[in-house]
Length: 339
Ligand SMILES: NC(=O)c1ccc[n+]([C@@H]2O[C@H](COP(=O)([O-])OP(=O)(O)OC[C@H]3O[C@@H](n4cnc5c(N)ncnc54)[C@H](O)[C@@H]3O)[C@@H](O)[C@H]2O)c1
Image 1 (cartoon, rainbow, N blue to C red):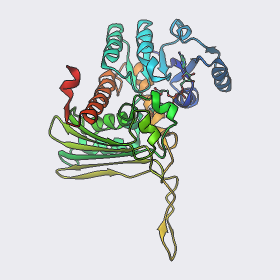
Image 2: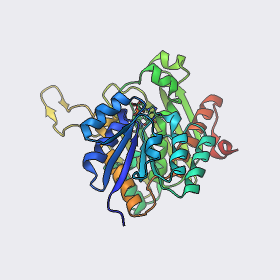
Image 3: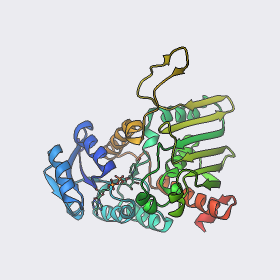
Image 4: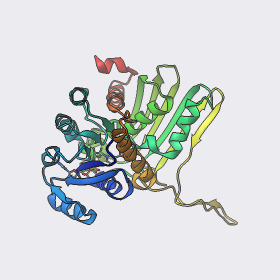
């Protein structure tokens, strides 16, 4: 059996650099063999620092390289589906950042290519690998809190992204809530059959002018009758607010925010502590390492990947349903999205 996996990294922007450093330095069973980015200067600067021998502008050079066993796709969202198809056709195993695509048609085409090629595919829903949320999942799976009845996900960013990003993001439900849709399916371990979304523009009118929302509530009805609510905002002035509570028949499981320290300062006027970790690069850094380690292990040990194409597709379907629910101001059943 192969001891070490040779990987090629496609796209070295914000998230590509995180995965690249983990592959190069922190995952002993992985070897970062090559990187590609259309921004060759950026790829050379990053790859040079890591001591990578093969640095290309065109990702096809990685796909045609027999030395490479697997690729990690960190290019912009609109390129994911095509790159998945190409990588599958080249016989490479694939880790791809979320979302697979913004339409189910493109996703189905990519997933067909993966199935046909018999390669492994993992989608970058990193929050599943966060130690806190993983513990809540175990509490539900083991029956520790009984049957789940209610799920509450609070997921608020510290501030909105630039308007240029908002315009190409696919909208709040596919860009931001998508992580929460996946978290809901992961924690309850069931599919959602109906969503009802309310949305508003409360943070910045320019977000509304760009056709998007910055404030949203989505209620979820799971197949087994549990209920959920996702509460999103693009701006929580106190930092990245990432909390979860699940109420079950025998108890509850909650996750509070992570802070940079646990110090509590008390004086005659107040009791206070420092703000939560500011954004995903701080809050979820460990989870990015654990998810890619799990991918490398799945390929080398020939095990199923822990987040597959079905999971990637389901979260996008929920995002599409939520947008339709908001636009038509009514509950939307997931089967409508499939029709
Ligand atoms: N899991 C998470 O929490 C998380 C966080 C951030 C981003 N993402 C996802 O990762 C993807 C990338 O996001 P980002 O924030 O890193 O974007 P980014 O714009 O910082 O980086 C994208 C990189 O891809 C490069 N690129 C463009 N076309 C390319 C091509 N044909 N071949 C190779 N490289 C190409 C760009 O030059 C750029 O360096 C998005 O789909 C996003 O949704 C996921």
